[in-house]
Amino acid sequence: MPTVTEISDRYVTEVADLDPVRGERWGVKSDGTRLTDYSPEGYEALRGLLARTLAAVTAATPADEPERLGQGFLADWVGGELDVLESGERERMLSIIVGAPASTRSVFDLMDRSTPEAWDTIRARLLAVPKAMGGYRESLEAGIENGRPGARRQAIAVAEQCATWVGNGEGGWFGTFVAGAGDGPQRSNLDDAARTAANAYGELATWLQKDYAPRATETDASGDERYRVWARYLLGTDLDLDEAYAWGWDELARLEAEKAIECARIVPGAAFEEVRELLIGDPNRSIHGVDAYREWLQYLTDEAIAGLDGRQFDIPASIRRCEVHIPPEGSAAAAYYTPPSEDLKRPGQTWFPTIGRKSFPTWDDVSTVYHEAVPGHHLQGATIRLVPLTRAHKLGFNSAHGEGWALYSERLMDELGWYRTPETRLGFLCAHALRAARIVVDIGLHTGRTIPSGWPGAGDVWTYDGAIDYMVRSGGMERASAESEVLRYLSWPSQATAYKLGERTWLAGREAARAAAAADGRELDLKAWHARALALGPLGLDRLGTELARA
Image (cartoon, rainbow, N blue to C red; front, side, top):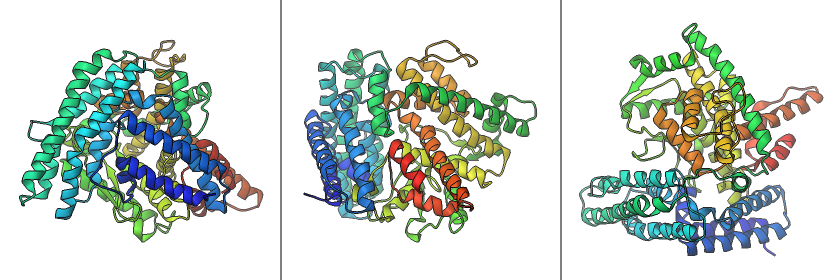
């Protein structure tokens, strides 16, 4: 019988072969000329792999602690994805952040571009785009035939995203991308390949707009049953929707009260909306120009690494580099992180969309840097690459674990005094209020729960526009960003709850560790606890809560 370690290693290798886009994101060496098969046949092959892996890892006997942790993680991970596939969710997956078009386009951001041979690989992968998008279209058609249409609103959003990348008919984003190869002998072939990829995106955009959207459903919501399927996969728990919804409102109320206190420090007597307009509109409180914005974000990232290393964390030299990048127009509005490659040769990278802006208020991005880089996603994700865990456990991700840690990291930086002005601390509070609002908006929109008394719209069922209003009001974001946020929630049920519910589990684990230390007559060594907790690797909420209590 194979060991947990062998099953884990084989799973990573086979998934990277079946799903090269995922493999590239993991930084696993595979055939870089290929793209993922998003057709029904491709998903059936993935389903078979997930089922075989689940059966094998469940039957295995762990030989040591890394195998014990790795067995639990892998069983939850593949079991959750298997449930999503078998419930037909991939047949209606339309998303500007995790859908096949967005995932395929962004894979090129991660590819090596340093040699002529690397550009040959890129050219081959560009030529594979039509087949990948054609397979995705087949799956969406199967969803229509099987009575699982996607939402019309999402179809239009993805079509518009694809059209943005198509550009002016000369290759669009893909043409701009291959221009990085210079004017050597490869350029003509690369330009042809870029136009081939762009044309495939253009055809998909037209089909989504004119053919699919009229057959799509006007219903955005998933309903309770589908929502719970996604929650088991993304959060690693059987979510109590009523408890989570009620807790989200309580947490939002707490944060709104703290926001009011911080607003009074900036403009005494002013409401949040007035303070927000000042912080957004005052040119002296903004960074001007995309290049200057990226440089400022890189400075904040480097400052946090230098300031925390040796004090709150011991950060190995191999992961002290985290690069800041600006993704192309058409990307979703939220910042995101891509982890280092398996061999750490490709560094961790954070991506901050500009969505057409040229001026960038600084008050609300500081906490986002800590969330995405250090001590957030980069410290967590890169550290996991270095600890003794099984291969899938090192490379895997659970939304509630990862996003919960990143939100905990924002709070930790507040506890350590890193928000040095009322403006940046208000930004931190808005970031947390946004995540609390995500819980109530996401559950409310998807499951039809009503807005409770004491809040705007009390007694009403959630609407798309009403949800955007809540995101603007709670998070202080601009309306275009808030709309992108709500589109994201509707395309990815339960993921938006991962942040606050995950943070709640991390905080409960820390308090349990403090209580245990106090019972022994000592103070908790927080630096040591962080090291032990991160070494657990990604775990769903149920397993994470149990393991943190032991850390």
